[in-house]
Image 1: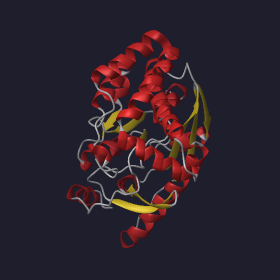
Image 2: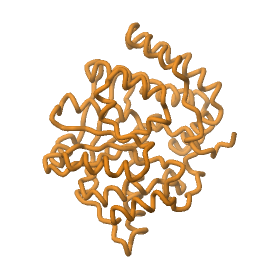
Image 3: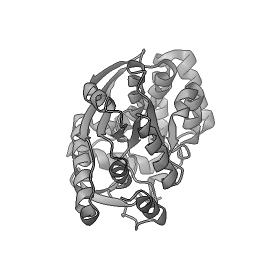
Length: 318
């Protein structure tokens, strides 16, 4: 398999049995026992998942600006495994077992108070799941998460079994674009915070390239078109894993109203995506082992505009 195979074609790590086993060990053996199991799990994936191993090495070389050792690649995989394990505890026990510091939460509160809804753009960095910790601190703030349930069915099944109410708050990204947009619009009209990841494009999405860790990289345009259509504040969120049981949630307001003029759409999109990429790159330098795109992020060629995407754009007048 080539290193530039699209991420959606890669199989889910583990299966129903493997994830059930991790869940059983974690919930009945405790987090300490669960974390001990991460060492053989990390080694297994390091040995068995060659394309991901290579992608990790190439990414770390960009992020660190120097050649990296295989131990650093293993550290990267272990960091990813640790955040996956912590999803179980975050959903089963909330933030109780963790130390979660927040920065900029008051700025998010201010935008939620406007009552127009908020778009929260994250990335495959650290733990987006740690975002749910603010639910306990802000019980009156509805949270909806845009998530592709079909990409990781075993993990999705596990998470929904642990927290059925959380599963009901998911907007399934495997739907067609119009259904996703309508669900997000309805949530925003109800004053919800709608969270989605904005750094990875699906196979059919339109992408635009911007400078990222030394080379042009493709980013999806759909989050920004939706932000323009919904006309709600956009806040960036970074959930950094700091090791052990420590996380840092950072909220940065990006715009109170995204405007993408029809006559100047390309440059406007480029400016928004570049700003997002710059902030993502900043936090990658802060915590380089936290970014979990285990495929060749830079070589994906931008696809032509897909009819469904064009239909969404026309439907909402972007």
